[in-house]
Length: 159
Image (cartoon, rainbow, N blue to C red):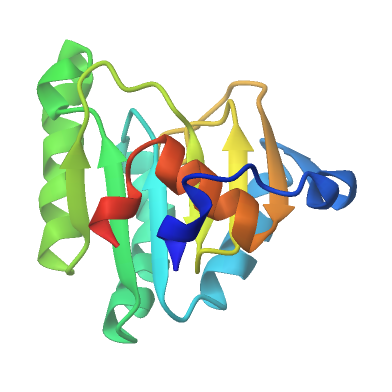
């Protein structure tokens, strides 16, 4: 299903109805969309903090218990700054114990989420670590654009 988008450009029309979120409005919308997932969740977030994960663990647990595949692509904890290395490592262990597939990409700095191959969030907000910074995320509802992104970041091979 995803591979059909690799060779063609996606229809840009859904961009016209996309929605913008800041660091305050993002998480309520994102958690609402996550709660409706039935197949897969792909999240790219370079950093992971305990504080943010405590807020997200219950949702990830519910998803994996329902059989939703959750894939997180992040940096190796050794690439986090020194004070965050153990914190990220512990969070990753907990994610793996609940059935989340964790991938590492060196020097990764992308911030995006693709939900059920149809909803794409992309922007500057570190989904798994955001705390007190001013950020922006755009939500686009489009199977084509989501598929294009999965292919572009080379994560479609994991689905």
